[in-house]
Image 1: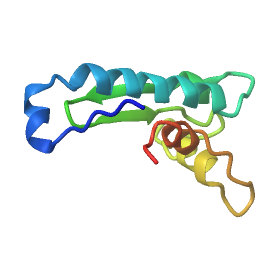
Image 2: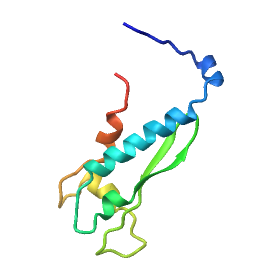
Image 3: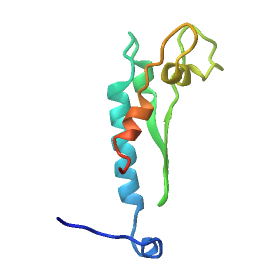
Image 4: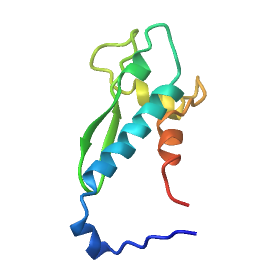
Length: 102
């Protein structure tokens, strides 16, 4: 067995931004793979990493429903969570869960 224990104070000495970027890119790649595939591939094509810091990252899905107005940005959310008319087809949460610690 190999073990490394990191203390919060030690993180100041480690450049964690590269590791965070690698994890965020992995989550985004998995989310693209898991996203529902339509004719335009708009949902998977709109997934990307928009911000990375030493302590976190933001992965965003910016797809628009082609039948909705351009201002309607909730389409990725409703695919992920479902509606009363369509069941949920999660893609972001399962991608992120793969990288969480037990």
